[in-house]
Amino acid sequence: QVQLVESGGGLVQTGDSLRLSCVASGRTFSRLAMGWFRQVQGEEREFVAAINFDGRRTSYADSVKDRFTISRNNFKNTCYLQMNSLRPEDTAVYYCAAHSHPTGSRNGAEYGSWGLGTQVTVSS
Image (cartoon, rainbow, N blue to C red; front, side, top):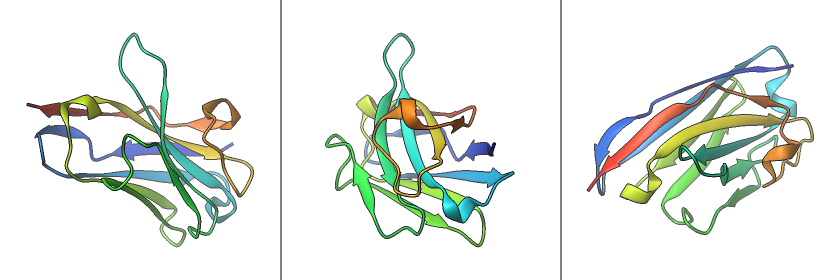
């Protein structure tokens, strides 16, 4: 089991940037793939981005491609989501998740550990 804590959310305006962080503890972070998901209340959870165990492979939802960047620092046990050119439709609670397979997945059901989430609100 790995514990995950997100931070970095907040209230910003359209076009602004935010960087989310996810600090992991409890298991060997460098062996885990990581993912970011988001959810609007009353809607289904949505895949945002994923990164494999060593950071060499990434995957993005079409809605965030070219605006968001996922990265990781295995020495700091931290995964990041840099979000640029934010839009009102990016408003959601953002969750990081850990995948026991080093490759990762876009399917949230395959992730075994989740953080509590951080709210991102983008005003128009």
